[in-house]
Image (cartoon, rainbow, N blue to C red; front, side, top):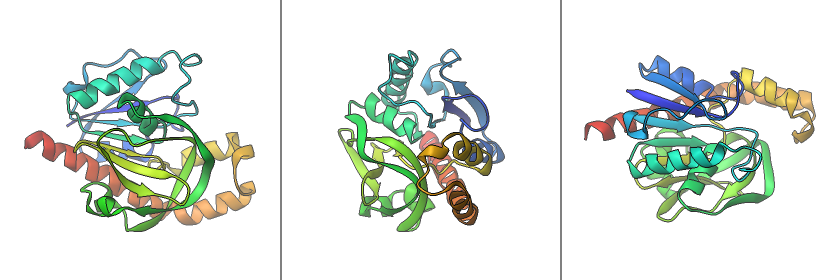
Length: 235
């Protein structure tokens, strides 16, 4: 299956991380679109699935990042063409924007490891419910949040924020970061040291303990999404 990976920063620390690796290992053909620098690829319907990842920018910074509006239009077209979508952090915010939902600064930031709970709908969801237990600890790094798009279903939540939704039967969005690997986090911790909730070494020690299990869940999420996309394509 042809899979489009939508990224927003150069280098291995700003892309799809674990999900890019997992997609290739599962036998899919991966195309990477670095939206600030590349022309848009062929129409969304030419892909069997699309994954949209994070970035240091915010989803409403069109003045600073002139390419944002074009990406939003591409994602809006993908939703209209019923292409299966999985989006992460900034990606989830851009999908919400494309679906005409409010997106803006959250009441508080979530950076580091936070507890998340699946909703009843999340437990029954064929993608999130297949990848996560009812409660789990997830890595987060975001300052913005979203209201549910019209017709969307909340799949997961934390104490302070909504964490995941499904729009229709083909679009999934998560606010947390299941795609991170050790290379990405080492860069993030170095460049964003002032934003960490713990001293650097404590943050790295906690992450070293939690990351192997988190990567297993991330692979499970990516695999469940791509399997669902393939099933939808054949139905």
